[in-house]
Amino acid sequence: MQSKAKNIVTIGGGTGSYNVLSGLKNLPNFSISALVSMADDGGSGGALRNELGVLPPGDVRLCLVALSEHSNIMGELMNYRFKEGTLIGHNFGNIFLAAFEKVTGDFAKGVEIAGEILKIKGRVIPVTKNKAELVVSLVNGKVFEGENNIQNADLQSVDIKEVFYKNKVLLNEHAKVSLLKADFIVLGPGNYFCSVLPNLIVEGFREAILKSKAKIILPINLTNKSGHTTNWKVADYVKDVEKYLRKPVDFILVNNDQLSKEQIERYKQEEGEGVLIEDNLNDNRVIRASLLSNIIFEKAKEDILPSTKGFIRHDSKKLAECIERIIKK
Image 1: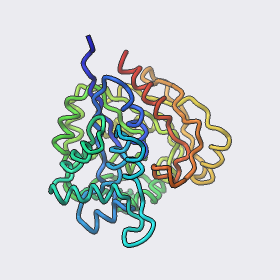
Image 2: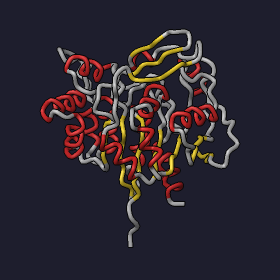
Image 3: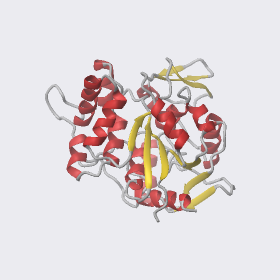
Image 4: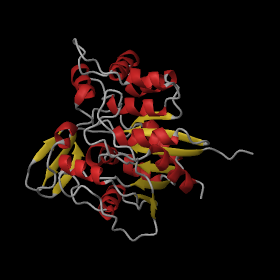
């Protein structure tokens, strides 16, 4: 007799969510719900958000593609970027999702229909239906508004005072139900201040997490982001996440593969010193495993992931198998 499917909820956005979902969708007996940040305001999605008043579709698009059981051509179609004309710079999938929001009057409903068309394994759920304008204020009074500005800001010149939304941003009811029904929650990996944390500060999120009986799995990022988490160690990530959750995580996944000399040098050229994350946590919740992709990714037209520092990535299969071992314990 087949055991009941486990409810797995992933939380994040962008490349990190794409990688974890790409692996999880191939595992049997999992019911997957991907909660996605709505703070993105840059690139094609940001332009559509500003011009059409829609919610940002970019991170949602990546999650839909990751979970799609269609052939690769559908992924290529959803991620096709126009190279000329009035649509230059826009992804087809972003326009597709923006059109669905206009037709249905509800972005979340449009995403649900898009998921049916793409035959995704699971659900993709915007964490909020509200316009989400992310703000980071520093103790010296400096303020950065908008995820795109925050992405390129130095948040470490002085201490961060607060990370918040400029307007009221409420937890999507479907996201709340998913969190309450979850058996396991996978928090990240991904850009901490721009993809992971924006979910945690949505009004109602913390309350749902506190009520949820799910075990929380925290995959630690492979590298730090300069100006955001420079010189952070494993313990720093855990401490900050738990500050926002107000509860401990249950499992901490740490990569124990060594980066190649070429990967280290290339990353330091882009990000500077302090980008490698030191494993300094002596805690029985830590699970150390081989999680690094041995491929050095190049920025190319067929690479559907946003690739500024993307040549160092988790191996989606290894990450999913590690999560599966935890769940089957």
